[in-house]
Length: 202
Image (cartoon, rainbow, N blue to C red; front, side, top):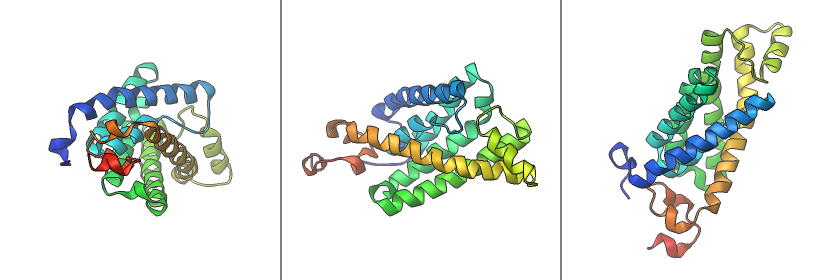
């Protein structure tokens, strides 16, 4: 199938957006209510980006944060984080990085850095370093050791971001493995995840 901005917005790809947004909302609300130090609010973004590409992934990330923002306005400020994750993850899928363990490891590292950098900027400049999330405890610990605010927030996001990325990507991968080949083959980026050789030649 043809790939790119013009071709990524197919009917099947667009139908994935509400699914991805729903997964993001459920994950975010769960983490918020339980005050967890980790976030599983990017499962939908990663899932959709892996199957439908960077642009659909970016849109899913944005809409997920907008919906979450209706219940918790803080989430809207982190839209850039979700959009960055969806965009980068979509390109990693396009380039076939998720087909082997080395590509997955590289993708996790880059996604962690991207998420940590963008989140740190939002936390420091929009919220003064405190968002009320469970990770604030870790930030306070770094501050107590004498580190500057920016360094403390970034360190916290690198640590929590690595765990978040691994969890979100792993869950997304498990879900994709449950999707039938007859559906995967209809998506521009689903070819990489087809499980049977017969389906690849249909």
